[in-house]
Length: 287
Ligand code: CAA
Image (cartoon, rainbow, N blue to C red):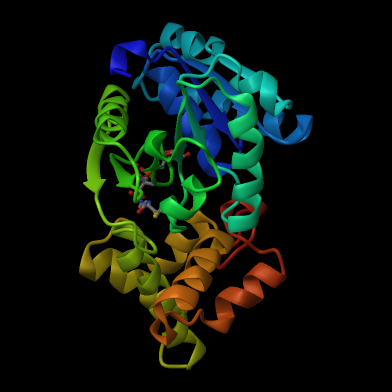
């Protein structure tokens, strides 16, 4: 397959990442099928796309016509088979749990056309292990966007053990067509490149606070005003979703060892369902 053969992109999962990826694909002119497991989730994702496009138009980064045209390119689905019947590429952004993703790929393999490329937006899980569930591991790769997708430039394009170079080429071209900068990652290791570095940074900040050596305000102020990062670690954890970072760490801990042990401070927030911006409360309040 080549870039010009791609017309329709299905995004599975309408959450934080899924709706943002769908928005980026629609802005690039693709027909987008956005699917989640129930009407409420998929409508919520659609509403967030509408909100985000409105914001971009408000700031003159888009015309109202462009915003409306992008929104019109997004169709919503609950039925997985229907959502992928005409898909050239499926970008999967369902929760970051191996079992959930494997179940989705089993269903997807049975429903998607033979030519469809599967691209997972996993933040850390093994591409090869996910691809093994399908009968098309050569047409399977990682396509990892960053939060918020509409604002972040980078996309990691990750090869599994059996991914064809042609698949890496077309997905890298697709990232460029979406106005993003792809970085090819040829080793399928936990967290790939960015999260291997960024998530331990969030974890270490949490350990420093947990041990009483510093405070959330001190950490975030130094990151922002001294180190020059766009956001402090705790602000970033709230932006990404504390549960997302926590699940990445759990997986890195399991595969890479004790250096990646998640801080209890993160676990507590997950248990209390204070997950950051998306739930209105995390390390900071957004209500
Ligand atoms: N669509 C449209 N507008 C949006 C938006 C979206 N999705 N998200 C936020 N905005 C708007 C806000 O509503 C706000 O609007 P107002 O000005 O009207 O209030 C505005 O954007 C915020 O803009 P700011 O001027 O305050 O901030 P900024 O433009 O300078 O930067 C940022 C915002 C791009 C998010 C910046 O803070 C940043 O780069 N942060 C770091 C993000 C990051 O590192 N992400 C990667 C996380 S790791 C990851 O995602 C991987 C993983 O797998 C875990």
